[in-house]
Image (tube, rainbow, N blue to C red; front, side, top):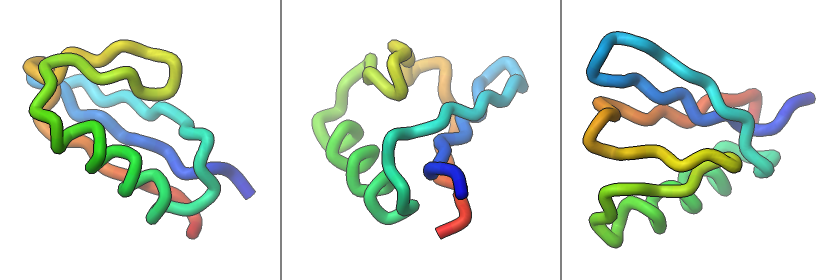
Amino acid sequence: MSNAKFKLYYVNGENEELESQYECNDEARSFLSKRLDSNRTWIYLCRKHINLKNVVHIEVIGEK
């Protein structure tokens, strides 16, 4: 069983999946919502800096 993943959809049409450290989707969603609540331009997600101006949508996917 794998950890929850973040699927990022970029403005240029590309998609990217990043594996999180969280086992459940709910934990990953909670982590993401805390990061997005502060209205930052950049977030640090799965050992990668993400510029939110380049992201259209972020989805949490996983088995649980």
